[in-house]
Image (cartoon, rainbow, N blue to C red; front, side):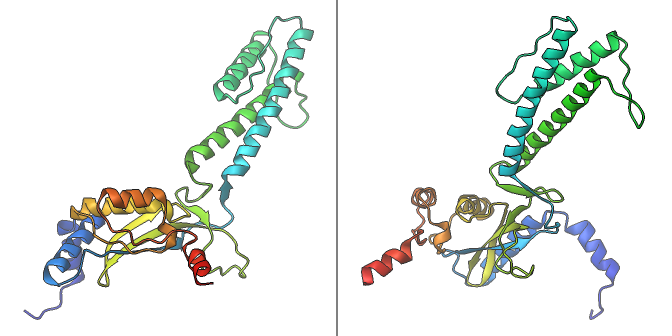
Length: 276
């Protein structure tokens, strides 16, 4: 009727009608475009781009650093266990804690629990604050608890990292990676971000895949599987740069009858040698 919809009309439409996920809406729009326009969906051009996450650049946690601190903390814990064994030996108590090689948080907590019960049984008071002198066993106990907390923290870091080499404390899903443009004085500072893959046919974005991988290689197969789930078939050709060329990706293409249009790493160097 020529009237402009009010903002309440938009609000009701979004609330009552757009109840499906954004992915479903995206796929439905693409299916309508495919029906109304003559686009070639047999060819899907793939490329990725890295986007900086909304996280501070100084919130990084590096997996290798955590592994080093993890091992060093365990070595300190083993030295502490030796001190505990010497303490109980001096006190004439037949207690000996084993010096196991592999870090074990359950073992650390078990020792801490036994030491705490020993202190309670012998009326050794826990003291804190200035002017309070801690007993030798409490000092060992406090040190033990500190190491247990550290080990737990590093184990949590490993769980969050998974196969990645880093993550951000304020956005654990983000991985620290080099971006194409570095506005931090162009010093190649690693920043938390995501690797976003796009699949395009005749200028229309047909598929989007968000990944925490720094490299494009491991994103190809899950990207294509997501495409298949959305449209029920694979494209015949997926032109992409050498960042996607790997044995696993080539075998995936062979299995699903996708033409090999991805170059591999070192392709251009081989071409240069042939022309010389």
